[in-house]
Amino acid sequence: MDFDIHQFDDVSPDSVETEFTEFREALVKLFAQSPEGLELQKTVPCIGRWADALMYYGYQYEGESLPEMTVGTVRNVIYDLFPRKISLASPDQADTIIPELTAFWNYLKREFRLRRADAILQVLAEAEPEFPDIMTDPANFGIAKSFFTMGQEAGFDMTTEDGLQAFMLAFNKGILENKLQAPVFTEPFENRQKTTVFPKPWLRHDPADTEFKSNAARKAQKRKR
Image (cartoon, rainbow, N blue to C red; front, side):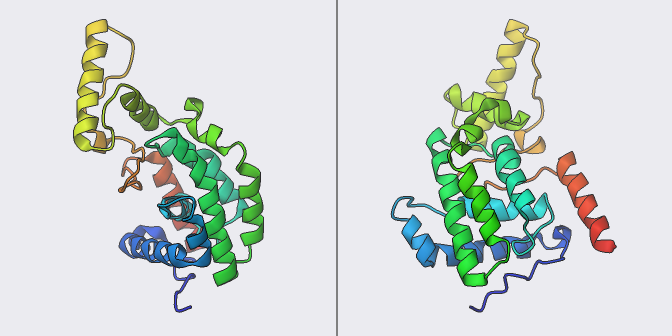
């Protein structure tokens, strides 16, 4: 296949954001047209979201392209970053995550013979029974995801900027009126730590995200050695 799966190996993500976005979109399309992707679409009509998210978080937060991706990185992404940062439009979406990632890695194994594919597939198989509960457990949510979930439960359309702003105003008003001890959000949602929601755009990072910055700095130092 005329697709360079290795084009971002040993390349810092800081200067290739556009190129990496195009890479992810192209690979997701190839996956969707593959035997593995077509078989998955018999039960999950819309695929590609979670394969894209794994590539994004693995590269931007952990500094690993797909061929470089380790078992440890996959565990960190699915057990920590996904539950903490990505919000779902409905809880049942959690049931589709591991099946899609499994089909995606079976595709990568067959098409590109990635050497860690079998080990990563084993991690995904072990995660599948408990993962929906992990993904929807509020104890695992980050601050932004918790705020997003509160808005959903209050009946606001948190998939739109208008809905986000409307809930922020209602939330702050309620706190002030009831004199509750809770944070008051005074700046636009887009300027605070990002959570993620489907449909697109589901992958955005805040320039002030200290975790993202520290990982980016660590990766830059590593690549200079």
